[in-house]
Length: 337
Image (cartoon, rainbow, N blue to C red; front, side, top):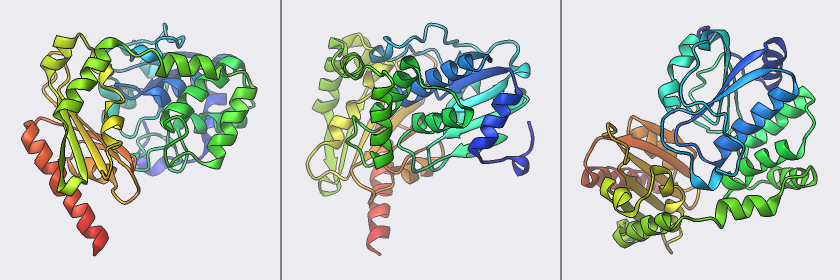
């Protein structure tokens, strides 16, 4: 891989690489959300339409979130292929190298790395980087790439991008719901995306175990800093006792963020998989006044968006809570200064 000094940042440069190469490895961050999975599938379908050969890779071994099982992702690999050295690595919705988890070595082995993302703190680890911080989702950038490549929207492509868009905008309720995002949604529906099927599959097919996990998180919720922060946690034993896999915790933090008067919410969870000592912490803010990505970066092992970020930590839960409180207090003090 070339040095960072030779990287480029241009959508047309990504399109040029795709035209000039025939074999790709598509990858997203571990513990993928709807934007990652929708972008992954859309990129795969686009490369298929161009006659390119590609493999989809998902790091880690945690099962896919049940709400996305309706997506045609049966061909997703959980191990790197032996011929990584012969494929262009196409990373999507991945803010930095560490988020690739078990696929991180592909960055060094692949002859070329494409990095397409919308996290403002992306580390620009690719040879060609397209980081559009004001894009609603990585799926939105993928749509722009399809235009650049001249790939026509099919119903399947449109639905994959719609999944990326609708989930990362919180069903078009978050601050990243821009006019462009809404126009794109209309375009995708016109192209054949099945809005009702997507809504029912993602938002109205909740497992009972997930509801039980939510109940435990809500029961433990505590407020700090005069109600400015809401924090809760999930233990490894919680997952085992209710019969929930790690992806079942996805979305729980949004219930914490909805508490009246809260500027910020945090959910600390112990991964149920053996051999994973680090706790995962999700952060959400209710406005631009608190940049949770800065708090995640201050941990030394995290990042994300201004209003949605996360990090990992081997510290005990009380220590993590204290760290979050200190960082929040500093952020509010800096804002008042």
